[in-house]
Length: 573
Figure 1 (spheres, rainbow, N blue to C red):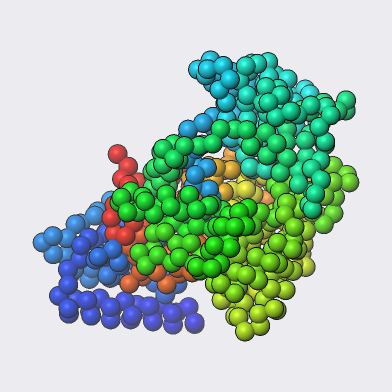
Figure 2: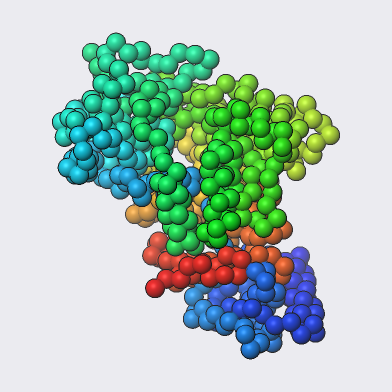
């Protein structure tokens, strides 16, 4: 009954808005019609046409009524039976990483160690002696066959070094939480069998993986990566701008209209502002300040958030990296890894830092977004958030919308806390698709079933779950993540019925997680995220109806048009 009342209320409201606009005699700048239009507005979930004026949605409704807004100068955009949704929002990725991935070796799709070595060998042929060769994207657990020589679950550098004797090689893991070096790079860094196996300090920072004789294998996890990584030549601003432009173009090609950057510094923010001023920033951005630069945070605490009235460059959140990733066994767990007894992963910054940043953020108006993959990391962060909220009892904790990025593996008793404190779970469904086949080896069946990728349990707690890809950890294309949200399968369609299928999203939930919930996670739900009168005219058009086609066909769909602020910024040839 309530659903019927909402529908009738929505129809009545739509008629009133159409009548009001028609009475004013205003004509639309553009009208989108003749397609399946999904609004993510629960009152009117589907409409036939949309009128746009001055970058905002002027009217929505049936085609006959909307055509009344057509004037002599109105651009008529025939969808030709395609599907239009609110613009897709990438809620957690790395803009510069997406761009740089196109400027160096992309190892995301290599299927074996031999293939990785071949790619490096090709790069060596085109490089001068001594020139660094860099890349990213390899993941040993995704290879279809493993090399004969493995140490602690990783390959060794011997084959890599054999094809690159005169060039230092530095290849970052897909997760960003490990890296692989050849002998030349380790020689330059002074890494040998006398090097310490672990970094000692306030936290367990990382590990140089060694074989049984104490020889470094070339794999460095977590903060140990900096031992070699600090030697890699710094990027130039010219190359950085090239990477940013390539990343923006890639977003628009894939139907992404807004992008949450998960941790950047002042250089990136300044670059965005220059692009905006030059008219080159065709995508809306929401930047999390990197927590790896304490002095940067202090500067921003002093001046407060930067909320762009044009909604293109907003800075009002802080990113903290609190544990590692599951692939390199860096995710911080309450109980030991099933496939590495005695190992619990890594706390990658002191938890006192989470407390300190959370308190300062509450006092200065910033949102905190903490990376947490393992169940212990999630619990520790929830505890720190709660303590900070308690210290500021006059602050509405629900209005702060603190986030946990990834929230992949949770203790069952912590799930309800997300809803109770209004902690946004910024999750990437594609990680379930990519990781679940081997994650069970890390965690065991009980932990997987109770607390891994538990989207429905989190939503049932009252928490908002927003979606994304963590690109370049995964490909930026949102449709594989949308598919994983509703199927709980690998991209190959395995297993039949999906992994832990009771946690799958409905298609309506999946669409909302990529639109309105993404907008909520950046305090923008009143401006964008659904196709409603007065909101931004940000739309994505697909060649297939992703809301009705068979699941596997979702992966064949393509974005054919991307609209930001009423402007068609991408159109498939």
